[in-house]
Image (cartoon, rainbow, N blue to C red):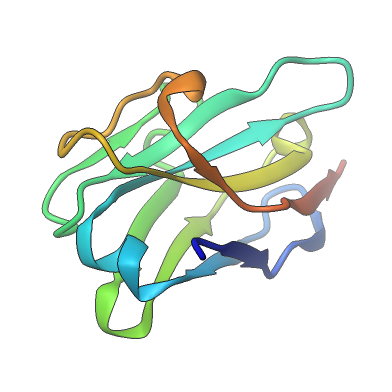
Length: 125
């Protein structure tokens, strides 16, 4: 069974840092591109960052470029999102996702077929 579980969310002040993690099955980390998405109250889920299976290429939304870093450790079946210089507008539930169909990750939410349950990140001003 393919599972993804996020952890590490919490409350942080603006300008602070937080690292969230996504643990999953060996099947995912052996083969799939992965990504992070977020959803704020009343808004649609949006792309944050993505990474190829090998970790060799990464992609970011303009809103987080230069502040967030996506990475993965396939040997540990874990993906990370390091978030620096956090802003109140980064407040959202953050989801990790895996795409079993494409070697190059997409920014399109609907094309990811495996999702975690989400972890809340709240940035206070």
